[in-house]
Amino acid sequence: MVQIKTPEQIAKMREAGLVVAAIHAATRDAAVPGATTKDLDEVARKVIADHGAKSNFLGYGGFPATICTSVNEVVVHGIPDATTVLKDGDVISIDAGAIVDGWHGDAAFTAFVGEGHAPELIELSRVTEESMWAGIAAMKSGNRLVDVSRAIETYIRRQPKPGGGRYGIIEDYGGHGIGTEMHMDPHLLNYVSRKRGKGPKLVPGFCLAIEPMVSLGTPHTEVLSDDWTVITTDGTWSSHWEHSVALTEEGPLVLTAVDGGRAKLAELGVTAAPDPLA
Image (cartoon, rainbow, N blue to C red):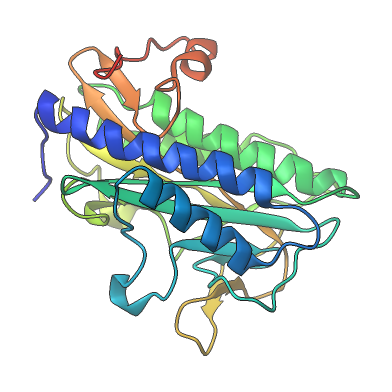
């Protein structure tokens, strides 16, 4: 069953989303050469505590940290530790979440550490982020879940990959519903699958975490022996972007974007819903 939220509940999710946005801002600044992924986790812990929120990652299924720090070929669920030291040229995806009064926020971004990044990595992140926004723009009343998947996949497939070939749209992981839990129905594929059908119709109160994950090579992944860290099977590097989004009577509201998604959606010809906390 898909959980449909009231405007008041969406406002609470917006509060949680702004905490996530603050985590992103702080960890982006801290992701510099010489920092460890544990350092970033400690930054996130402080932000959550300063906002009087709770972590929805720490302890989730036994996960031992506040954020996921996925470096280079790690796609998702990388565990922060004191031995992973960031260096020039690294790419890191930081996935973070927070709970406010029982309501969840969840979002991720890809950052470039230092200098010396190959142009194809910069383009990979751009394509992944823009595909997320294409999916967000498809959050319209009357559309179905598959329309979001199609928008994400279509954007990625239309982008020429430097050096030829195709981007790998990660198959084993995708977006999800969000609300009183971090992961809820429905599961959102980042590509269209005939087996999954059209999915539920999008209506006001529908909330999704939209999160494409894309690699420079394979769409296939494997989980390491820690039972969390997910890597590409061919060792190619990847990018991960995510926002939590609520569909309202007045359009989509990007709960984890500082401006509610207004500026980016305007570029795509979509009017973002008013911020309930403004």
